[in-house]
Image (cartoon, rainbow, N blue to C red; front, side, top):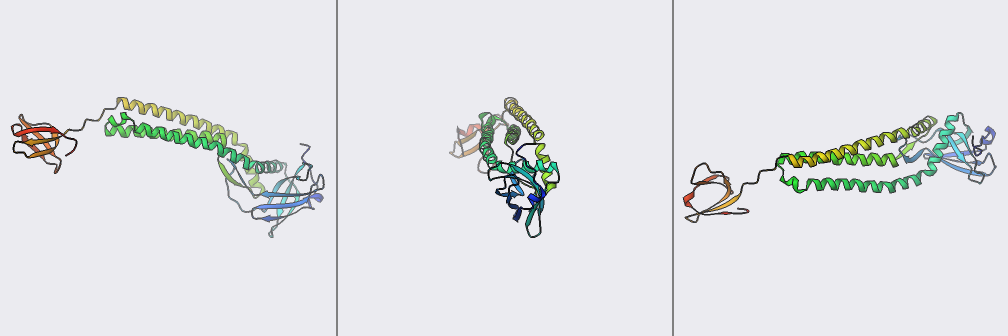
Length: 296
């Protein structure tokens, strides 16, 4: 056991008093090691990264870890019992497992602001990378090869590119969560919840490894989907060129404007009128001029 850990007696702890204010226990009393007056605030909630996410009421009784703020640097554990009125009293800690969990909770509380700020800075790069993936997907959908494909081919390539974008985004999120976690609020109002939080904290290495494997798998899926999308643009059939629009000027100066269709008889032209959609059959001998146009 560390020399900084002090084992207070029941008599020393009876000199402490406290009050529950919301979800926080505010405790005051003499340091059992040096005798100087010490104040401590023990919250039932903790804003951290990837810990037990559970809502709970204000603490009614829980093992707490207290550090001397008067200069000696010693720390000790005690059981805080809270009455219905909100008044708190301390007693010796009943379980060594709870001592370890309570100390881990205290340390996590003192480090939470710095860890959250550091993680927020790293997540800026993650968000930027995600936006970059979305940009690449948009460029792929707007590329010239896409415009040359038939409609069915466009939908197929767009679906594959969407899979690539989703998989790439998942890879980025999983990788950043493995590296930096996700901010959550944890509640531990009693010893059972405290032990559960501590157990979940011990499981974090396996959770991180699982997320890294997921990130690698998703990145492979994204790369494969992009390769498939590129291959489809090469091998899918191109769209048929649109039928030309023409304006036919007859010998009597009448005009017919529309889509030029394949002829069904020699010496005649077939034009689907742009105004009413009817198909007009024009004798070739009556057509004085046939001109391509961009619109009718």
